[in-house]
Length: 84
Length: 271
Image (cartoon, rainbow over all chains, first blue to last red; front, side, top):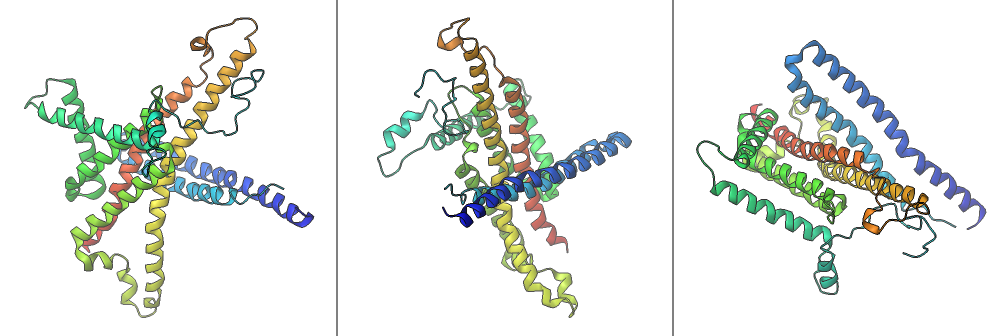
């Protein structure tokens, strides 16, 4: 592999490696905020715990699905990494 | 495996656990035929057969007042799924309790069967979860067509408030494209969520078990043990407890999302 292609491939590999953790960091932040809000709501109104819990699960799942799109992109791009 | 001097698993080529179960003979028998049967497919059929036999046996022995633990568990399960369907879809959701409950109990069994020795979780194979997601979304669309009629079903793709104003009516083709893309995104996110969670958990279990074997290999000079007793450091046990939790949560999330998707179609009926 010549110089430019090797440079391109190394930058490409670094980008693939950094993308998924970046998505995970921000999604973890978002999920933490959702969990904080849910636990505060349950602490204020314990009788609404069932409803809050179902909404919390739904929200966490929808945030998680964004990470899953990043995971799919990771799987697709990771197959394109060619070692010299 | 070659290289006795290496620690256990140190010469592995993949981080994923091997997909060999006690039913690997089925693959060895059928791999040269026109319809080869991998281990995960055979395990799926085994789980289906077991669940059908359990449901048939439970229904045969139903009594007006529950006297057996089996019937009590079955009644509790049906009531829980019924409450889930009614809360996500509405009063009409009671008709779809069998669909949601079947998805839940099937995926739960597929997730947890990997914890038994000699088995694997078929849901850690992407083909299984993609098939499940396609089946779930296809039944959602079938139910929508059945409940709303062809015209009402197609009207779901058009946002009615946009049509009223001539300034926003040009956006209707754009929203139609977005709706169609989001239907495919539903399939991808449903299948990849289940696959990613179960596969990742399997990888962690396998690597922690290998770590325990490597720790035994460190002390091998001091204490020599025959192979069945070499698991002196079962580091994977806490992760197995986490696998129990994740298996239940992912099965619940899959069935809850199917119910929510049905509810998203049916809520148009009130407009």
